[in-house]
Length: 339
Image (cartoon, rainbow, N blue to C red):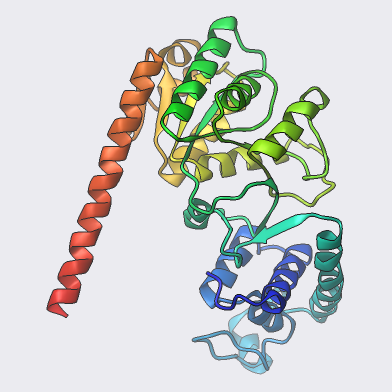
């Protein structure tokens, strides 16, 4: 994504992207603005266009004057002068904020940074930025291990065994640093000497739940903690589903260890399907949660009874992915030969 390796260029793009997020108004969303910036190749150009579209047309677009627009759109559809003032102020503030974050040791990673996780670039709700503590790997290969906060001893054991197996295969263990299944998966990854990534539902400066403060610090030191929220954002009912969406996009697949009828885990299952990521359900989940049964016959869904069968499912997923990659290579090679 990055076209220029200079710090000044990246700082300018980061500040513009943060300003777009700060001044975002409906019908835009953070994701839609991010996609617009990716397509344009510059947040600076997108922001300049938002502030003054007449003098800053985007690539492939011609500005339509207000007189002409009046015959095409309702008045509410036109850019407002208030927005231009708001966005300009946000840009100035964001420029200062990016510098302050760096001075405070915060690692801001935007879609313009080569370190931004590659798999998150391909999802429908790509975040504009992440805050990171730990070791970033742009092409990290991992699997999400998710389940209930109030899990059974059998569920905890299954989560630990899956995490141990993933580490043995050189795969990253991804979870959400919640109590229960998530914590057992993170802990086993650390104990096994493997890599683990935690997506948190708060800002990067916060620890939630408080009982996992020490675990969060250990993951920061030995793995990676990621947040898609402003650094001091508190936990809310909305932040955890958003966190789950990124977990599903970051990983190769999601293993659902244990879930109740009203478990938040179902959000990740839905997002995984939306992202085209495989789902691996422990068979007891199908027995205990009616919502899980709707996935039984869907493509990319595996139902397993043991950790060994989780491994078999991952082998099948890898085989399918490798076959798709080989087919794509053949198509591209053929196009070059016959061009």
